[in-house]
Image (cartoon, one colour):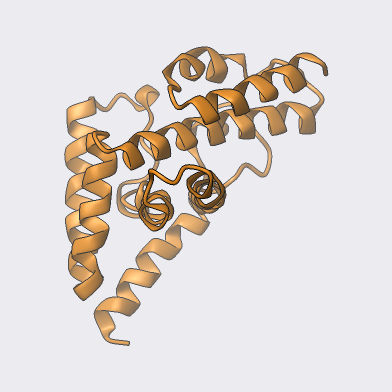
Length: 183
């Protein structure tokens, strides 16, 4: 392992301590890290892509692992952080270019997967984006249950559920909403 790879691993290792901004803003105790989120998304991508043969399973899993990697450098920037979409996109692109260099031979693939996810044009990117949205809603539900405060995080559902378009993920969302409304 060369020094650059070690630097890459140390940099992305910061995702294990980086708490997700939305949960911090809502004062969630012991909130998930970006790495926690990326891990569950990768597991969801694994299950999801196995039942959707038209998708490249490996690409979906890799995309889930890469999609928030830039946050190891720029932090978790949300719409409420006061940073324009254009500025956020540029910061993340610069961070991914830095990570691309550190990752040496694998860097091109990481960057390419991130660009594809951001563009949202491939079937895999659209599916993984919906998994990203769903994971946030599932996490919100889990925090509501943990705190015994039903519907406390409704704004996450209001701002996200209508953006999900993948039929399987919509089915998962319907089941989640049934459970949520029965508590």
